[in-house]
Image: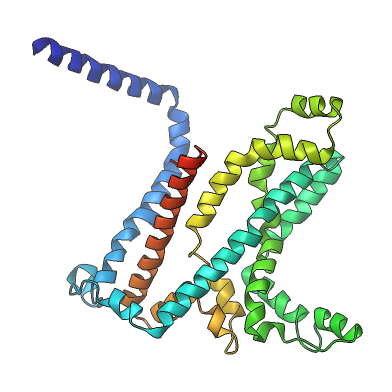
Length: 316
């Protein structure tokens, strides 16, 4: 017993020594990490305590602790309303549309950009593609409204010039999702491709040189060298994207929303905004938001588990 205790003590001392040594050798890196860690704790983890109001009848005079506990009242209230199924379906459909159509575009763009000749031309294309990301959502939706206006819009003028009739794009429900997804692709395509461009820089030039010697075309090199090289990165980004399936931002949807397209544009996020901030029903909106976050969390874990089992690639 004494020998085992001595061995355990030695192991603990050895572990403590190693930890101390690692910290002393990398203290500058940990110092750089400290501001981000503090920000994460202060602005992400501490506010999580406020989630408890989803289970309370929150009263600002009583505070979070003093408000009476009501259990799952607001969750039942949400699922008993007719708006629940509509917002869930709309959010899921828009999320799936972005996953299917928007997610592959940055990957394809990065692969094509990597094949462009000329260092300066490639950088110019890359810079131009980044620019739309820095346009605010308000400006983006305003641009859509101006370009798609029935009378003065550039798009409708083209339609009329070719013998067609003006189309009310912004007020018809069937155009909401295509406009949302396509404008999102245009805005974020270049910026989202940064990750894949960085992954492609790690591909050895020797592989391409050997493939050229063997007579491989550009398409064959992309298919057999570039795509397999960035596939782990693509899978990781896909897992993260699936985890955000129900996290569609409310700002853009709310700006594109009007009385004629609410049947498809009313999302969980826009509903939470209206109920929580506009109508000041804080407990109810927190319950809806918590449900939304739990669904995303389950999707993230499930996708990661499947990816880990099938492809041996995952976040954890």
